[in-house]
Amino acid sequence: FEPSFDVFDSKTINAKKREKLYERILENCLAYSVKMISPEVIDSKNILKATFDAMDEVLGELSKFEPFALIDGNRYKGKFAAKTIVDGDALCFSIASASIIAKVERDRWMLQVAHAEYPQYGFNKHKGYGTKQHIENILKFSPSPLHRRSFLKKILSKNLHPQIAMVEV
Image 1 (tube, helix red, strand yellow):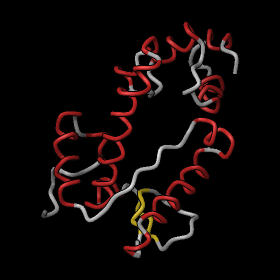
Image 2 (tube, one colour; image 1 turned 90 degrees about the horizontal axis):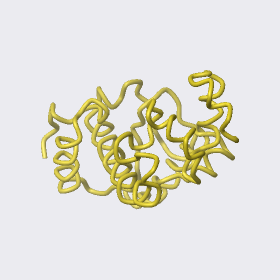
Image 3 (cartoon, rainbow, N blue to C red; image 1 turned 120 degrees about the vertical axis):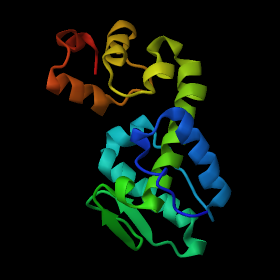
């Protein structure tokens, strides 16, 4: 499967096209691994440390391939050989492909698990991103176990919604 100009930053591709690319990528990749991080782990470690730990876990699962990781961003403090690339999902086919896999897996989980368990939050519409509707639903129903307390504190610090102070963090 030749690198394609259709594969780039997953956030800029509509969901239907992303799903098609996801299937095509999986049909042609040697191996992949996805790690979901719980809100509790993110809140206890911070999102960056939790992300680095998840990267190491995934690379460990792929260690029989002696992975060299290409990572979107400007830093990686982990156990494996890696090169960071700022805007990597826009510049590197491998990073863009990984971005598509991760986004599709996360969006599917948000629909199949999060929305199924907590439909009142509208995860099927915003998929957990901090939209106005999402914030309003947190205010209306209070945070679910899926909401990161660190996310809620960030909203409070930005004072995006005066009423959000009523949410117990």
